[in-house]
Image (tube, rainbow, N blue to C red):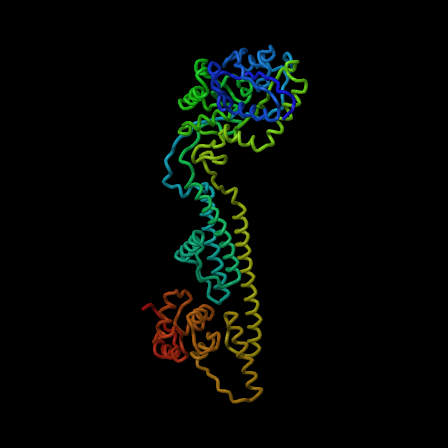
Length: 554
């Protein structure tokens, strides 16, 4: 604060309620209040002035006699020394120079905004489908169907590789694969068929799809279940606003905003004289009865209207805030004020805006709690659906992996056939009559041949079991502990046709057939394991010592 003696400054203030900026009855002894009054009070801490409020000689007027124009003219005529100026537009009389009036730096910016109709809606019966667009749901269904055929093809290739004769796929098998594919899409279901590298690669493709699909759907579903139960009717983009018919709350702002709208109406003079809320109510009614598509006003005025009950059927479209207007102080640049008054005023304004006190005043008067309950800056009553176009990368990645899985499966099949061919040639040279069908059988046969050669070379009297039942048991006893688990028996039946034929099972054996065979062999059902004696006893008692008899369900 300056040490010089205080000087008097007459400030022109509208003698009407003009909240949140000012509120003063110039005919009484009441003290003025509002954002502008508090700003002037704080500026007094930096400038040693004796501030006196002088009522302006005009209220709210329209056209060439707008109160902004008249205040500027009264200021130029010396009715008072200082007043608030804004809307620096030729239509309001704000020319580059008017008398000895000068302007301070801006200390606040007003923005114009748009309010449109809010229509309450009922929650959809099928809201659980809302997170995704119809084309994305169709893409998911088609992906599931295609994946089912991929699984069926991979299964067929694996069967050929394992020596099972190729059969034409049945309708039942196709339906089962489609079921498993859809179940995996919905819940990531796993089932016992990932027995080759190609199938395991295909599984990675589905797991990636399920991960992204499930996470995206779950996250977006929450947004749709908690979204406001209303929709907005009216312009939501500047292109729509430029073609819309609107109600402009105050005629004084028409020159500033008319270039941003298609056409407009303004409240009658008697409504404008009744105050801001009356003007807001007039425009809101015009929106609701369809006279106009939107209402345009200063952000601060729309906030006040919504805070006082307007949220029931009007909503603020925050992305349509436009036409910022700076608030400045105008003052008479003449001998009545100190020579350095303009510099002092600008310096005080800058200091105030940097202080915590200025932020406090804005919170107090400028309605920071703006949005209606259930609304916010990013919430305009509708959540964006996820489209197929946005998720196309997921389909491309998963489809590429599935295609790679088919290529790997074909390579595995070709590799197996080549190995069988080489081994068949070796067998033909050795004179054996046994023909392997799978890689495991090839390895078993090679081991057997090496053993026979060693036996002949060493001339050792080794006891060998030639009974097919004993050979079959040792073939599928993978760890050689003399016991068969469910998994070992299942792998043996799957990988060795001779074992299937020994037990009377066909190539289309189902899990139920397998379970019946396992239970029948493990007679005591004590430890869920089969001994060699139980295996041989089953073959002798139920299959006539190795004859091929069909094992049927109990």
